[in-house]
Each structure stands twice: as C-alpha cells, then as structure tokens.
Image (cartoon, rainbow, N blue to C red):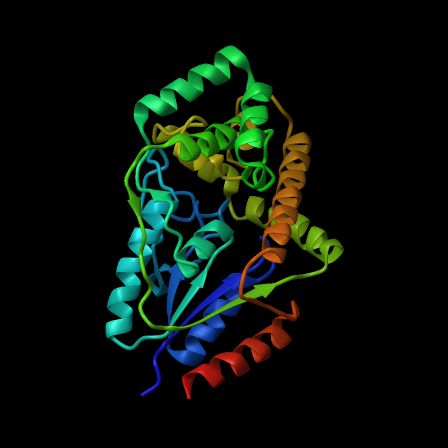
Length: 298
C-alpha cells in the first residue's frame, strides 16, 4: 500500500486556503491540521477567521490569549499528531497563513527553542523602553537581515521576539517527519483582486460580531499586552472601544495592515522551497491539487 500524503495549503490571508483544504480533506478522507499562529487562541474566532467546523481540525483552541505560543511548540505538537496519523495510514492536510510554521515542519528545521527565557524577554523589553525601537531594529538587521525583512519592523513586539529567538539559549530540537509523501501547494491570487476581497472580508467580520468578540475578551480580563492580541485588528479595536479612534479610521488601519501582511505572505511564498503554485481560481485550484494528490495516492 502506498504511504499516506502530507500536504500543505499555503497562500496569503483571504486567498481561500481553508475552503480548498476542507474540500480536499473530504475528497481524500484527510485530517486537517491548523498552521495559523493565532487560531490557537480560544475566544479569538472571528478576527482570526477560525474555521466554523472546528471538530475537523487539530491544533485549534490550544491557548488562552494571555499565553505564549510559538514555532517550537507548534512543531512539537504537529509532529506528535503526524506520528500518530502516519501509523494510522491517514492522509493529512496542513493549512494556515503562518508560513514559518509550515516551512519549519516540512523542511525539518533544527534551530528551534521550545520556550523563551523570561530574563531575556525582560531585558529586551527594558531596552525597547530605554533605547527605542529604531536601535533594536538596527541590531536585528545587522544580526539577521533575512529575518528582519520577513517581519513588520514597525511592530515592537515582533522585533523583540525576533531578537529573543536569536539570543535564546533554550534547548534545540529537531523533529524528523514520518515517511509521508510530501507536497506543498500555494495559492497566489492577483494582488488587486485580493485587496478587494480583503476589504469585503473585513466588513463581513465586523457584521459577524468582531467588535463584540473583542469586548468579550476585554471583559474576560485579556488585553492588548497579551500575545493573542498581536493578531491583526485586535489592538486597533481596543483603541476604538476606548474612544481613541473612530470606526472609519480603525477600519482603514486594519485593512491597510491586512494588505501589508498579505504582501509579506506573497513574498514569503516566492522563496518557499519545494512549493507548487496552483491557479488561484477556486475550482481550478481544487482540480489541480486533486490531480496531484491523486497521483501520490496510487
């Protein structure tokens, strides 16, 4: 019997990754594994575009918004799932917008630390307050230019976390994947069309109760300093709820941030090793992916 497949479905936010992956999962009786850094947070559903049929997915709703979650933990948990699924001869689809998670898993990265050093984090946060963001960005660019080009260097949390990963002395672990047939698909829609769809997607999220979701999180004791609130839009809604910005300004800021994030994701995919680009049209994407997965399953 042929080995089961392990396929990734990548693409910028709003490109239709989840819909494609779910359709393929039905066709091939495959298990879905989440690879989105913010869909692991409970209660953060609308703003992270979390799947509604969560029972079909592994690695959703793992953490509260005030808990940390990162690359090392994702790979460890995903590897545990994959080891079990391979023994059961199950096909697997990994889907999500956090490209680093998928790359580290599929390319078997060996430079990951499971947990952060609290003293190091406090030192970097103190330096951010005392020296300013520009100094830390300059240091990150000098130490790891490829890393600095892949994050939003205007975001102080992302800059300090990147420096933290570089300087961490935590344990290094390498996980070898079971002998799946591996393939990575990437949707690459036209930027102009994607921009239009992202604006529509934002309106639908608001209509579905995104602002109320943020209110509920605040009432539950979570807030903008928590790791989960690094997801696009959540801090801006906090500012809006506090009266610091109006609805129109908050909306414009979030749509602009989402478009910038989608652009970074497209850039990331262009450098992704061993990736197969497929037609962004939903039906054609499905047919192309189905044909290639079918060839792996015979």
